[in-house]
Amino acid sequence: MAQILVKAIDATHADPVKDRRGCYKRGMPVVVMPDTHTWGLDERPPKFVVLKLPGVPVEKVKKYIEPEREDTADADGRYQVFRRRLWKFRLDDMPTAALRKLRDNGELIIKVGDYADKYDYTWTQVRSYLRNLKTNTDETASL
Amino acid sequence: MATEVIKIVDPDNGSGTNYTSLSAWEAGEQGDLTGARDEIAVAKCRCTGGTADTTAVDIAGWTTDTTHYIKIWTDPSESYRHDGKWNTSKYRITSNAYCATICNNNGARLDLWLDGLQIENSRENESGAAGAGLWSYQDYIFNITVSNCIIRNTASSPCVGSGVTVLDAADSGTTYFKCYNNIVYGFSNSSDGAGIRYNRSANGATRHIICYNNTLYGNYVNLFLNPNWPGSEPVYIHSKNNLLYNHTGGGDFVRSDGGGTWDVENDLSSDATSLDTSHRNQTVAFVDAANRDLHLSSSDTGAKDYGTNLYDDAVCPFQTDIDGQDRGGSGAVWDIGADEVITVGGIPPWMLSRTRAIQHLMVR
Image (cartoon, rainbow over all chains, first blue to last red; front, side):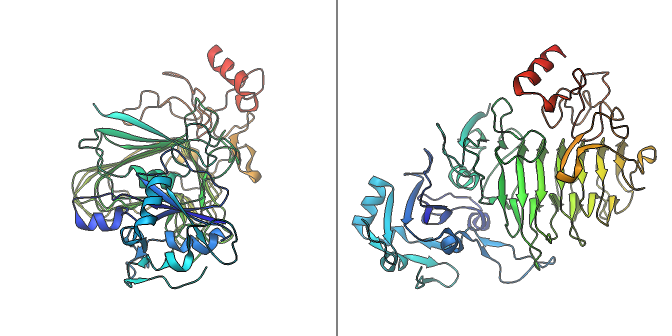
């Protein structure tokens, strides 16, 4: 039963390496919470938006908040962070109506599986805007 | 002068909550505190309904300095701080994160103070994973303070990380690592597990390592200090009043060699490894060690009243214990470890109600 909190504005650092490794960019998922979760005062536009996936277990979407790690391990056998997040929603490429809804309501409701209540878009529609930054391809997996 | 910007972090989203996880706070507030923001970024953590914060947090992308720092804490004047024993109704951050539940990944100078938190890592042993409580690998100078925290590992087979792991690879400037009044247990991996682990891995910086009044219990090594990588820069190690007990194989205290300037007083060990020979092979009575209530028993004769008074300490003065109780000012006799035994009519204050304990402190 998941909701994804997504960063809606860029954080920046003057050093490009620190910027890539450390800074959240617009569209990067930050945390995943259950359907029942209510968000705090700052977890909304302009800093954040929420994508709601009613009925989807949190564990199924936790992979979207993993960082992108280096391909090779360091001397201690550890894979250091290469980029703050591996996945990023291409928010600016979404349809204007979706962007307007995110701006005005701060959230989109995404239909997954046999969810039968009100929704804005389907997962099949939204996942095509969810980019794997390592492979530079959009998500094709079902939830 | 920098302004404290306080944001409330509460997984239960009580009144006035800004963020419902520390991870979201970090994402929402990260940036340059030294420039136009001129800010001390404060996360005041609450737990109004007993829910744990279950998302690990990486601290990265920040610009800080001595007066523009990050402070993550529970305010002891509120009711969300632990009471010296792991408490599932108080604020706690728990995860099975690969690196650490709280990880310094800043890749730049970091000025950070963690105070009064409960931090847990439960990742099962896995090649490459650290599974630490706090992990800081720094190529840059830093100023990190960890105080009044309970840090534990609950994996059945822990990873190699420690409760507090500091790998200091700064090659210029001055670093400060202060750790006082903490309780750390369960980091028992037989390779690198430790309660507190400090490891220097570069030359060029002046370093200050300060470990005071920590209770480190049941870790593979309880206190591991390795400040002496080849190099001529000054290294100052201050280790006092630490209670190092029941290591699981590596020793209560381990250091690589004796280089640097060591300032050691009244570190107690249950084996023969304390640098203070008069406090080796000691037996300490805890309230309920089996259930990790590591408050000192009022009947203890090993640690009680054997500490050094650090009220006027030159590098890290303080006066309270992990419960916020007054250890006494100049001239008072302190206990070794994170807890100070203060009895009122034979009853230690942590057994009293909150109101009663405050009354006691006022009388004292």
